[in-house]
Length: 81
Image 1: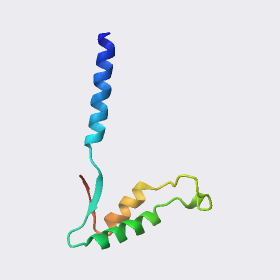
Image 2: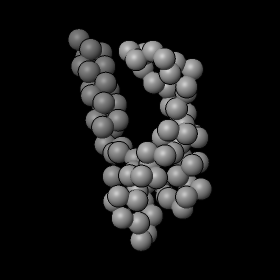
Image 3: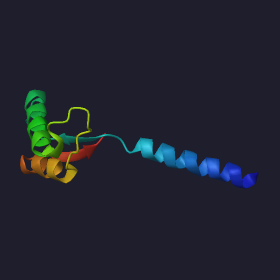
């Protein structure tokens, strides 16, 4: 019985830690919200996997490294919030 409670406690700790990491956002000094959203959208479009472009119901694959490098090339820094 003690092993079950230890397992539950461990699983709870992992879930709480995962939720506590926060959302990754990109910031750049002197940039307006409109400019930031425009840059994010352009980088997102460039990071899409266009293999399934004709299929509406298939989930879209995003190359996260390409997205991040695109924003960093524009002067943005990743910050957890």
